[in-house]
Amino acid sequence: MEKEETLKRIKKEALENKVPILQDASLDLILMILNIKNPKKILEIGTAVGYSAINFASIDSAPFVKTIEIKENMYNIAKENIKSMELQNQIEVVLADATEYLKNLDEENLYDVVFIDAAKGQYLVFLENAIRLVKDGGLIIADNVLFKGRVLSDYNEHKHRTAVNRLRTYLKLIEEDKRLKSTVVNIGDGVAISIVKK
Image 1 (cartoon, rainbow, N blue to C red):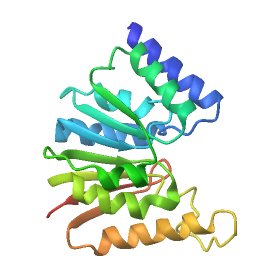
Image 2 (spheres, helix red, strand yellow; image 1 turned 30 degrees about the vertical axis):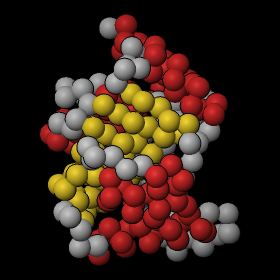
Image 3 (cartoon, one colour; image 1 turned 180 degrees about the horizontal axis):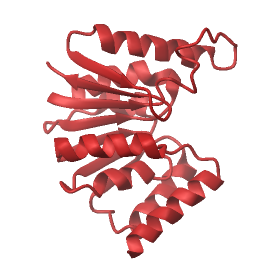
């Protein structure tokens, strides 16, 4: 019960501080998929306060989660939150720019699942690395692929134009890439799920 209360506090503080975390509907969907998949290793790109990593590490298969965060303040908060949930042996938080870090990540034991929830303008870079780092038959899950409805509309304002265009390309790529079998679920801010067939 104590851990449930701690997780509620982490979520409440994130929302109060306007830190983007997984929306409830998206989290429920992803947790359901993970419980079916029973992953042993998950790679997360974009830690924020550690909310999703904590949820992922808490599923029945108790996977190891490596999560990458670029902002030092978020990294420090995530480390504290993970410690408060007594998951520091199960979740490794890496302070790094994922676009650089992933290029040099070369692991023999590939990941069962890669979860992308970081800079929208970098999703294409993350995708190529995710395909390389995930097992054959593994999953790539990306959040916010509809970006508040902008991706499927005729949105062309300067402020988010690059991110929107890159997300449109991301959706096109996951549909056309022969290594992937993908679907996009219109819940939360849009969740793309791709099965990788190498």
